[in-house]
Length: 211
Image 1 (cartoon, rainbow, N blue to C red):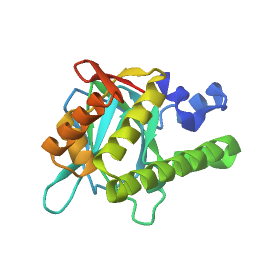
Image 2 (cartoon, helix red, strand yellow):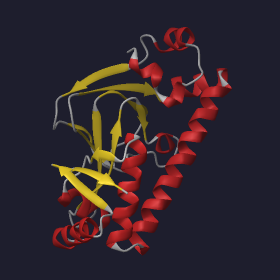
Image 3 (tube, helix red, strand yellow):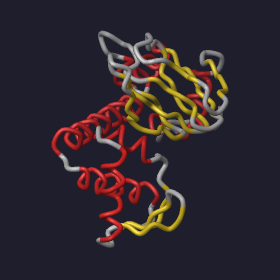
């Protein structure tokens, strides 16, 4: 469980203190690529922390239409705000995009840690605030943005995350179309137009240079 201590939730907290509190109180489970980690709308009683690998978060509506919300890379906590909601259920289905390890931190243990260490509480509030900002931007794009503006924001985010103008995107065109609420042909046309304008340059399979 070494990697869990690198989770943003525990930044600035003494590792030995965390280890002494969490030892024997957390459950750890490994998942193979493609395996379902958790289902949308299931009770959320322990905080999921991705220790290794990548989880994909997808949301499904009543008609069965799926939308990719995001990919959660280790080491990161999953939906911490929902753990403390009055109706604490998972808003998404989680699937292992790669071989992954998830640590389950019971809610009562996390509450005890926050009472004992204000830095953990501050980290949690920062995480929740960042997620609110992310979701508000996602809603804005889905509701008001054109396909090109959605792609522009998406490529800008990938460039920022990779720290380079050249990067490989984690999503297929169909996943992007689902994410943006558009058809795949419409998305493909918008990508082609951005390539023709020189905004993006295709370097390989799902690898682009963004200007």
